[in-house]
Length: 314
Ligand code: 8YV
Image 1 (cartoon, protein in one colour):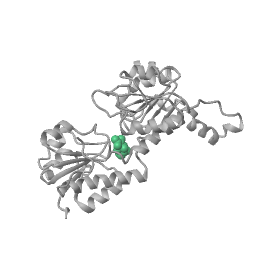
Image 2 (tube, protein in one colour):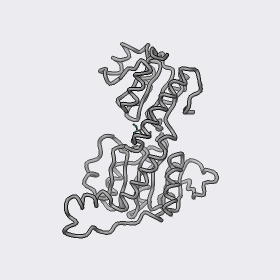
Image 3 (tube, helix red, strand yellow):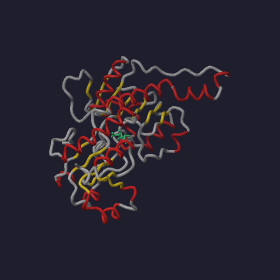
Image 4 (tube, protein in one colour):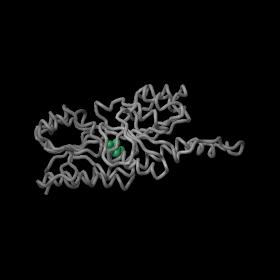
């Protein structure tokens, strides 16, 4: 039985995951304590595992304050909130939740591209506020056949490419290196990708190299008819530059699941009708959240049974 093993959850994520962790382990909830240091003072030596999320992962301070820490799991595919070099230095394995969320995040990217192009949200309001009885809705733009540029052709980027290809969209991508046998056009420079795309979709991991990878130059290369979709991380995009480009008509529209300072969204975006804004819901379906939670549990159990992790981060 693993009931005596201390596991620290960094914040409230998903009730099913919390229930399952509480059933199997000695679960500690960091949010019930006034601070990390107050928690560590009382329980540091009890904690052998951290379960983190995109809201709060495991930074160097947290890792350093838990001397018995053996494993870090994150309820996310993204690893940007985990100090990986620190984990490596301490010999602490890390597990995330790849694959199970790929379809949902790719679906949302396409949904945002369609919603921005076809003005789904604005036209829904148009019906609800009775505007339709006064005039027809204005014309929108096609999504099918538009050239789609994908930043990051990993699991999620590839799933987006496959979907967009089914809409007849020619696909290009940018990543650190060219991938073999994709059938998609590769650009080693994101500016060239943006110049040759009508819709640019950000789907890479957040690292030092990809912070603000979409800057003013990239936005201007995408141009006044271009649409930006971001299902990666808010920090991939220089948000202030995005806002001014949208306001000044230097970019046609944007569909955003992620923001630089979540849950805060720049006030100026809220009044723009050429943007679709959703609250970081890429993987938030019942099916996928359950699968992610089960994967977190399975990784923890594997670790404490001295078995290989299911989804180790290497
Ligand atoms: C969140 C995500 O984990 O996996 C990621 O990296 O950003 C999302 O899937 C999800 O919203 C649960 O917090």
